[in-house]
View (tube, rainbow, N blue to C red):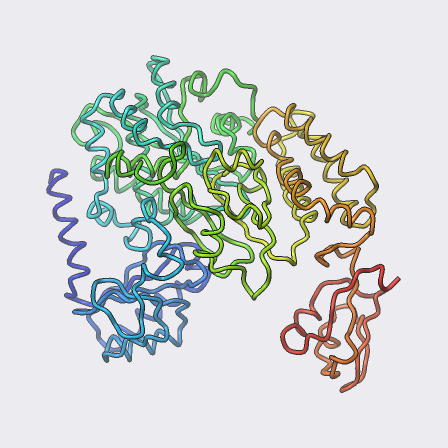
Length: 624
């Protein structure tokens, strides 16, 4: 069967799933879905279908992005639209089967939305949901709609048509298409992808290598993991296109071992490619030869840096080296090497499937296309989103994210992970693109967005991210190894109430030296969270140092807990739950917290909050 015949058959088989010949049940089974119970939901549907002898098929699909609503189940019944159900549990499974699969009641109270042109009263259109309407799904076009283990599903939606098109072009023509598209690397700094490919090609070497960086070490970032779990073939197709452009015959995927499902999907997809002749020798019957190996990383954050990643693949300790020479000149085993991350590779496949003009119609003049982000923290709609570059932080947080959760007040957003920065509400109208974020003092990074409400202490936030980078420092260069250690010690003293006048100025001086003297991007960007929090939240530093108080009532050494006499009815819930016996009192009488025993774990206030609100945090100075 040739490629065109295979595509035709795949399209027919895929379309038949949605033509209502039998009921189809799609279960979101990426890591977010599984952690929320998708496997049990899948098994429950299977048991109910068997019990009632129903003509239905269950298909595990990837993450559609609404992680806050997982497990998500989509039911496609004959003559009906696709109905998406959120937060499905075992009790709901039985009701959905009996009411909708057997009966005709779509149970609208559980539905998120419908898709398919047929409206159902009480259920909105799925892509009209506030969380989805501002988004443009390009990279995520297949996520949640295909079985990532079934290559035919990918083929049916245009898969591998991009490499077919690219193979008809000369490498220089492929690179020209990438230049027209305006794709910038999605791994952090935003270096033009076409230029990286061109620099490698210009070396004229007989041996070149291609590496897909799937290390993704930023706390709160999980875009690459999601893409590998939900649509691995798009990444692999992008690698084929890149390899053809630079003349590589061998490629590597460097993926951290903490991504077991992503690795499983990749290995399965690569096996399918080999079966169909899409990987190995004479790909698609041409003279193009290319194969891929997977290298499982040990989870070192520094190995996300190109030269450290190369060293790790070579079997050496993952430590960066000085540049130049850059990897495009001397990379893996001294040969010209291109390194792009997961989303960059998937974007290349998209560009050649849909055209460079289609890709470039979104974004800004200098930052083309769409970008995926992981949206987390104190926001209502946590999950994975995709928006055109040039979208504002306000649109992402309030229109898509649904505002800060629990009716709290927005305080800041951290973008770019440990290498990024924290921005206050005055920056909400900043557009998200490489240049604007750089001017504001941060980088886009791989795309993590962490929203924080007023309960967060910005000094502690800076300390948290600096602790991460200090722990992850490879130790090769002195500014990063010792400079971040000294900064961390100063920040720790500040949150413990031991800060001294001049500490902030010392932090800024150390930051300057670390940024200018560090060997790689980890050290050069490590001070960013500290500098941005000092710049935008200087008053919090001053309060910690000069007044010995934490305005957010977060830092344990600077707060105490107190029972509000007129609010406490002596329910004894806090007393029974205190792990150290710091609370005393009789039933139906006001309780008392011994601050000398209290470890400030927060258990009592969490139990009391919203029900009685009889416990409050106060500045330690008030109790002294």
